[in-house]
Image (cartoon, rainbow, N blue to C red; front, side):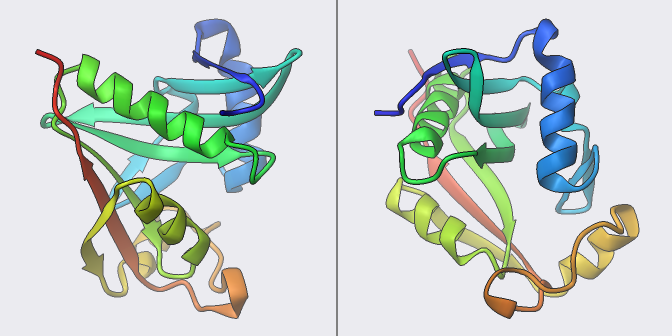
Length: 164
């Protein structure tokens, strides 16, 4: 259980979301599979405790799938990320989506481990996709976690049964 409460992002939260996205992602945009997203304008969830944001998730919905665009647990190991993923899965069911998906990069081994432990499966590898993504978002670093060059995109998906 997360140490804070999860709630949907509201219009009054947009400035805080924009600030967090810029701080955590290095730009006001996120890029995945050739698509540019503006997370501060997307629906999502916040985890809060005593007025402090502990986590943020933004998502987009298309083609009967909910795509996690950004997810950040500001305090790791306390259930914040799990609470956000659980909220996204519940929202996918509510919206009649049959899967939750996301894209990460090849260096993000902690994320791959985190999502697989929560029922996600690797579904695609796009070699050298990050080179194209840098044309849309030059702020993407060339080297990531553990000194691994950031070159490829990985997709993970979790199937969900829509609410009847």
